[in-house]
Length: 262
Image 1 (cartoon, one colour):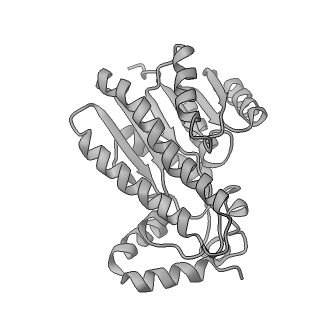
Image 2 (tube, rainbow, N blue to C red):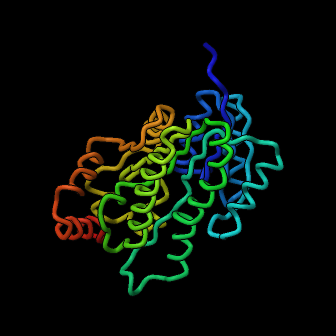
């Protein structure tokens, strides 16, 4: 039986897990809408994917740190006559250091990208899915969402929001034909660690780092099954369970230890 061709919108789709998710969806014959800040990077990614997979890739350069951009993106997609069957909220970044000393503007941008834009895009693209009684949403969270994170307090809090939000609305949408999946990878080999000042930590140098392709493959499969929660890897499943079983104070202290620069 021929597989249905879907159109998949992926934010942060020019590199890292976002790009690998784009490759996974394209490998299964689905068209793509890739969104990121850098148009050159987007067009390079689109050229590679279109050349290899023969799917259509549309790109939009938007900075989701701008509160106006989710609506502008929705309007641009609508103006192109595109129907989004799968929304992948992957865009996000981290910013490390002790909260009393970190840059407020960077943290407010992080909250805008990781939380506010994710909520805004979900609200906009969810309504047409409900009307069609069909659709999938993948929100890329993190194992950081399972416990507090000293030295990365805002980042961990944004991922806790994504986890809670995703699980709640998936329950709300139970009888609509729309599913919401939250993918919670742990340390992964992308540019994230460098930007978040985590490159020289136990988390990224001792505990082991996953490759973005395997994380994306796991996330794709979970999304297409309609799983509510997708935790790739035994180590990450342990972290998720430990967050429930270990006393909060101990978990918080351990989280600091693995994120301190060596």
